[in-house]
Image (cartoon, rainbow, N blue to C red; front, side):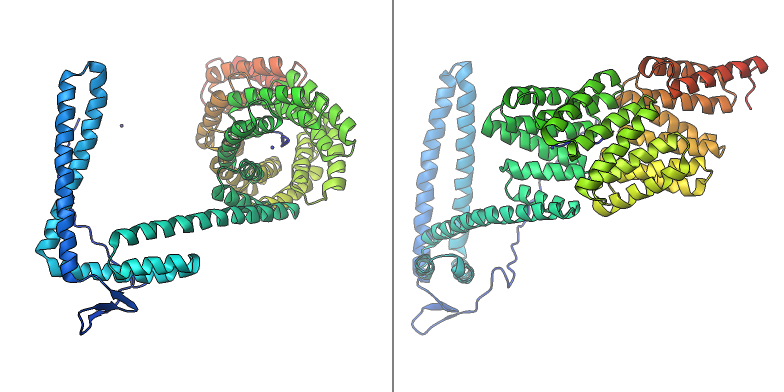
Amino acid sequence: MPRPTHARSKLSAIVCAISFAVAVSASAKDDETRTCKTTFGGQVVCGNLTIGITLEQYEAGLKKRAEEIRGEEAEKRVQLQKLVEMTERATSAEKDSLRSQIATVEVEKRALEAESKGVAERLTNLQASYDGLVQKLAEANAALEAFAPLISTEAFAQAQAMLSRGDVLGAERKFVEIADTVRKIREKADVVEARAISEAGKLAEERIDWRAANAHYARAARLQPSNWQYAQRAGNLAVRMGDYAIAASFSEATLSLVSLEFGPDTQETATALNNLALTYALLARYMEAEPLYRRAIDIGEKTLGKDDPAVAARYNNLASLLRVQGKYDQAEPLYRRAIEINERALGKDHPDVATGYNNLGGLREDQGKYDQAEPLFRRAIEIDERALGKDHPDLAIRYNNLALLMHKQGKHDQAEPLYRRAIDIGEKTVGKDHPDVAKGYNNLASLLRVQGKYDQAEPLYRRAIEINERALGKDHPDVAKGYNNLAILLQDQDKHDQAEPLYRRAIEIGEKTLGTDHPDLAVWYHNLAGLLQDQGKYDQAEPLYRRAMEIFETKLGLDHPNTVASRRSYDGLQELKKQNPGNPVR
């Protein structure tokens, strides 16, 4: 796919009721155990904390709590009885609400029953439960000391005083207050951290380290998920890194955030629509991408005007989407319009103009108009080398495309160094697992194959397939192309039993993602037909050749090299059938 522009499953169930004893183990680090001792005067001292609550006071507190619980239980019984009586007299519409209220009260009643049981157990084991209280107060004090740098001196003193006098409820509330304070501090820290790491991402992007920038932007987006700018940058860099599923997730979040903040018809929303469409297109989700592009263009034309470079970028992206679907007549005017706008607004030597030349060159190549494609590719390279430098990832794409054109014309000596240069740049800038690098591996493998260097070509094909399956998904058209190319290699070595399932898998993917009349699908029909012909299965090969010819003639025209080649293959099959009327299997 051409490089678009960013503007970016009947058994009875036996259920066993199991009682679990929940044990909480306090580590010496997090909940430090303090050695406590009782002084001559009866006071309990744990480290630097003097426990002010005595055993007698603790017992009295438990008994008071038992009375409180009994009172609450009585209230719940009365409340429950009233709700039951109301339900008996209620209409059908009212009963659902009353039943929900009854369920809530029953849950609260069961909780009170459990609390009552807990108080009774503590009274039964009074000394042990008192010792437990003292230990917990000591642990809380140890934790409080650890919190000291984060809270005020006043808050520290208040909490410690509550712990000392055994004011458990007061201390509980104070710890909640401390937790809320720390949360606010953390929230502020997250804001600062996110901004700092986002700025680091910008700097990494400036020095063309996409991997570092990608990691920085993703971190910022995780820290501040409601910040649309962080999500947008993370999505854009994920596209550059070939993490298209991740990019789609960030882009979906961006669109939601931007639409909410700015409204549905603003330029910010148009940009988010464009970038989400781009990720969908890269994932071969073409039906989802097109309306997003068209909506982005509509907003842009209304808010910016029809001659704005941002609108040109969306024309280019829609054109690329149409081109990958074989809709060349619809794509060309959009490409030309984008170039026209950018040349006038940005100048003839701008990288966005180079993108337009590159994509129009790719369209001409798809149409078999190689003589028209080459100067467009070379012009794009010339602009980008001057504007971006010779090691920019966009140059890798340009070199790869020109190499492919040379390859198709049999100019192998010119193609190979271009392929290798593209791979070298891609591996350095976006990494060895990027789909753009996979294109380079695939294309170099094809060049090596036609030169008979099968042992060098096969690992490159397999590596390209591996990258694309992981990055794009197993049903992506680029994966299908990899299967097709590997099948050709195996067929060239007479490994027909290995090649056939690969051709059929490529066709299965293509029919699912590209439709039944795409030129790439016609190539795979044609290649499978050739394999079947080589095996003497003429009756199976013939309809595939005919279907391939039909698609080529309709989509590419009568004079396209693929149309001519498919017609020649079909005629050759007819001649073989005349020579072998029994159609023997060889």
